[in-house]
Length: 166
Image 1 (cartoon, rainbow, N blue to C red):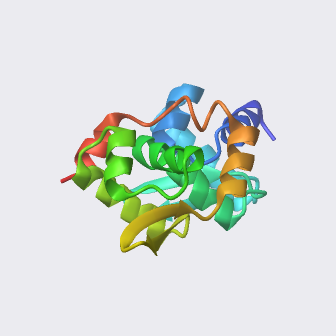
Image 2: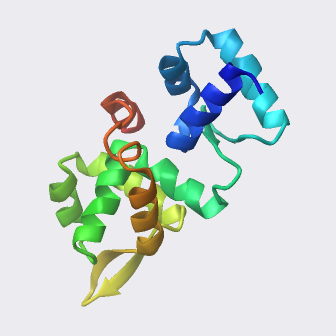
C-alpha cells in the first residue's frame, strides 16, 4: 500500500460518507489521480462506494448499510438539523420542525420526506395531528459519538439545500 493509498484511506475512515470533491480538497490530489487510487482501493476491498443519483459516497467496509443511510443524512445540513431537532424533542409537528431548522416549509418537506422514506423518522398521528418521531436514535447517537466532528461541523454547502428546494 502506497502513501497515497493510506492517505486516502485515512481521509475516508475519519469522514465516512465523504464525497469525491471533498476527498480531492482534503488530499490535494487531482481528479484523475484520485479516481485511479479510489478505483484501486475499492477493487481491493479497502473502501466501498455507495453510488446514488448525482453522487458517490465513500465508506470503510465496516460501515453497515443502516449506518451509511444515517451518515448520508447527517452530512447534509437540513436533514441533520431535522434529526437533531427530533433527538432534542421527539414528536414534533411539521410547523415546529420548520421553526426549529429555520428553513422554508418546502425545503423541510423535501428533506423530511427523504428521511421518512429512508426509515430514519416515522410519522404517528396523535390527537389528529401528524407528529414526527426518530426511529434510529441509538444509531444516530453512536455515529455522532464515533465521528464527531466530521459529521457535525463540516456540512456540505447550503447550495445543495437551495438546489434541492426547486
